[in-house]
Length: 354
Ligand code: GGG
Image (cartoon, rainbow, N blue to C red):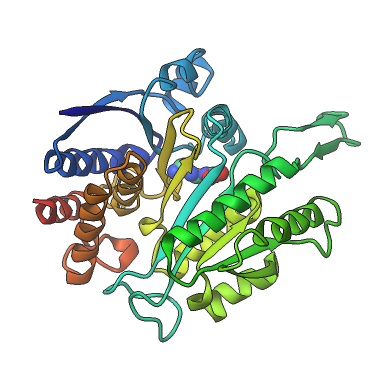
């Protein structure tokens, strides 16, 4: 029987409540497919910061490197500045392991209400592909006259032809693999940002020429946001920079019913390093500890982990279990208009997996 080693970082806030259900779903799905998981739990995050002054210890990346994949909950604590938590753990892991493709599917499940009028289950089915290692989140910049009245802050975006080309090619390959609308939408702001974004547009056109069977569309990010609301059914694969896709994937999650249903994968498509799977949502301190967080975004992220480890049947089992629970509509956390607790939704999914 094959055993996969999974690094588990529950992190902060609701991250600690959504990771155990995902581990249970993984274990149950794996049992049916003659696979086992060896979980290595790492208690990193805000508590580690309070105790030791850093989100994760020195040498943390060396501990993660030999694992087959990483399962992450959330990062963020009200008493620590958000840039400290994000730059102290999540972003360094993405960069160290060259997880350059952040894949964020948004699917309107039957039985789930979209805030958009007239949309039925299956009407919205898109994937946001986010460039994940450079762009606006590159750690390049600094302060001059720090904390003085004449203070200057400089934050530099970094766009490389190599970085753009590989994420755009990943998006086209994904559109081919999905075999659905066969459409890739590129999102930029090249009317205002005439260097980085025009490099993106030119690179997009060059890569698109290699995929004559895929329809293309280029939108400015403001128009993309508007069209996610006006005509969400037309989108298939949407590719954009680190910042734009971060924002648009919150919007895509909202139009399919809830951030609580939005999974994600931070992939090293070349498989040199472990890839990382996490819900799109953050630590949600307002509901942390109340036992009402929706575990399904993390459970669906676990399904993406199974897909990445080439256990497609097990991944479909998990997705189908989630779809069945949502279609029945009995077990629902408050974000979906229900009153179920995290535990009840978890048990409902596990029952379907049996
Ligand atoms: N699920 C991980 C998490 O806490 N995400 C919140 C967040 O702010 N993420 C920023 C990002 O994805 O770049």
